[in-house]
Image (cartoon, rainbow, N blue to C red):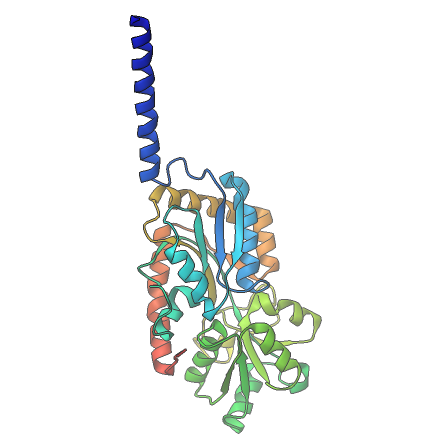
Amino acid sequence: MNRLFSMLRRFNRMAAALAGVAAFAAAHPSYAWPDKPIRVVIPFAAGGTTDMLGRLMAEGIAPILGQPVVVSNKGGAGGNLGAAEVARAPADGYTLLLGTPGTQIINGLVYKNPGYDPVKDFSSVVYMVRVANVVVTTPATGFRNMRDVIEAARAQPGKLNWGTPGVGSSGHLSLELIKQQAGLDITHVPYKGAGQARNDMLGGVIQLAGDNLPTALSAIRSGSLVALGVSSMAADPTLPEVQPIAATIPGYELSSWFVVMAPAGTPSDAIGKLNAAVNQWLEKPDTRARLADLAAVPVGGSPEDLAAHLRNEQQKYESLIKAAGISAQ
């Protein structure tokens, strides 16, 4: 009988210990993180720059983390729908956002109610890559560089039409900065995506378009589009023959970037493991080669580095948007 009571006491102690572990795990979602698949929300439709880079990252960090990393496209409202979904997700490290200047800064400045707070609703994980924007046209316009565009815009104010993926997109902000710094009158024509703008340009409806370089790269390489200038301070290695816009408009620079964000309150150890995984992936030679093919420059760094970058970009975009009077309402 004593032996039976002793066994029961040991069983009760084990049960209590297991209950304690379960309670700790419930209170600390990142305990033993990750122990299930991770989802990366792409706040735009499939096929664009954000989607291409997000899928490449998911494929690369999955073996490092030892769990599947699944990509989920949630497009709409300039990225607001996908960003809002992540902002409302459990802060356990299993739902991430591949953020852009639009989702993390611009939408909070041009929408009265984007459905989330770009600053308060997210924790910084890592600055993944940056890419240049590019101004493109068709061979039919006869434009060969940004100087041709500036001369035409000054000769006929308001006659040139510039298509972008939408109000507040990086293509739109690139145009507004050109207009401000060069004193030009060019008409902005917003579309629901880069593909629609490109189709109208090929059809002669608009003369110019601005977009991320990775999205336009194949059309430039095929000759159906002509690259007139890139938004980085120096020429992009992918298109070394194309001058930066800064060569014509001194001081011009407005590159785009892609960052990994998590819901606010995500445990620090999950953030740390995610940050380390992305940095490890970015350092691999094959990663750098694949990113170079997409005209993307790896960045990496700590969560604090990303937070500082976002603060600096907030100031830049806020000034530009206020001066241009941009609103998505």
